[in-house]
Amino acid sequence: MADNKNIIYGLYNDEVDLLKAVKEANGDHLEIMDVYTPFPVHGLDPLLGLAESRLHIAGFVYGTIGFLTAFLGMSWIFTKDWPIIFGGKPHWAVPAFIPITFELTVLFASIGMVVTFYIINGLGPGVVNPTIDLRITDDKFCIAFDKSEVDSSKVESFLKRSGASEIHSKTI
Image (cartoon, rainbow, N blue to C red):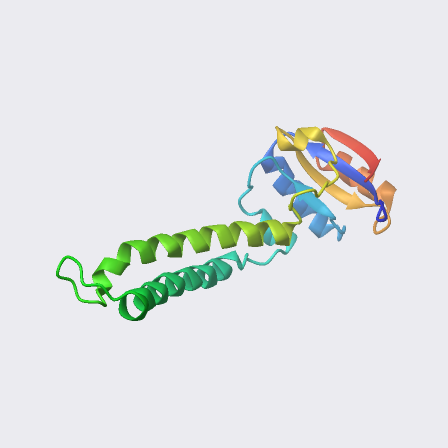
């Protein structure tokens, strides 16, 4: 591991306590490294200064690529490559293209968004991310601070004051 970090973190039992603690940390001008929760906590992103995700833009682009792939592909196949009249339909029967066009739009958008999400968040195959505490994926909420960026004694007193049920230090 080339990038070891010494961290100090506090565990909270409730998301309401976590939100209050993040507000207090912002008020005390403490640099929060990260916040870990077992489920999405509404209102946490603005408190951490995180911008809205742009994943929906990627989804639109991937969906457009799927739409164009299906529609232009079928248009070329049925008008130029293999122009066969079947069922009395013309070569370029646009209403018949709608189901396949819809399916490829959804397929490209969903797979593209999943791959983009994994790449952005470093969740690809073979990636091993350090785990601070196993309980943060189950029932605990965590605020972590990088010891190199903050005063440890100030952070420890903050964690005690803000209602952390446990306080730990760890190198990840």
